Length: 301
Image 1 (cartoon, one colour):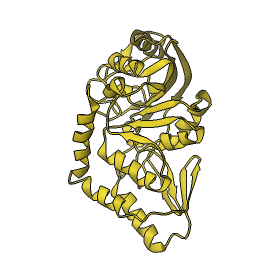
Image 2 (spheres, one colour):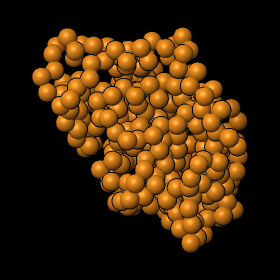
Image 3 (cartoon, one colour):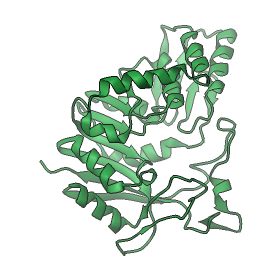
């Protein structure tokens, strides 16, 4: 697959009537030479001598880009309180990876929050994949100040195996359940890794020792494109069928209202609206409430 033409076609997405104003607003932002970047729980940017006029312009641009799903971000006094407190997931995973001098990809990278955090690990190369013009615009907005060397591709997981080079480490967080062919997706990720490479992945799961998966009839937690929610043993089987030699379970964690919640930066529903109001252990459809398993899958050397 030649990705050059696909990239050119997707660049046209930035001219859509709902995206073009975002692109224009980003280009109109002042360039600042003195920006201090702190890669902590919030990706925090401190601009020296920021005028009130420029601060207002920055906030206006940020608010044009709702919804902010991943974060948080801070630009001087402006706090972008994203729906997900993504630092919880990142801090959970950070002890389990070493990115020093590695070629790293983040599949379904959203606005790049995790990629920005990964800069602190000095990888050789950082590449994000996400076919969303609005999330790409959010990334551009933050990176306008950070000025990183992160590469953002408006491509999907199905393009990873055809990419111009292989990866040492791939992250794929919160994507697998959106795919109707989970084993096929895992095979694509496997093919995108160098020998000895590793995949760090999380997905919805259900409890049980059986090698089975829940298949929601229509929606799960009000989300229409959720296809399969496996037990841990079923997920391990999927990974082995895709070619991975070994699978480690890093953590199992129920999603709670501290990690995912409604804020002024999304203006839509969130987890509290997706759960049964009389039984928070169930979704509004009656399925088990969202729980995630975090794994590391290894490709043989």
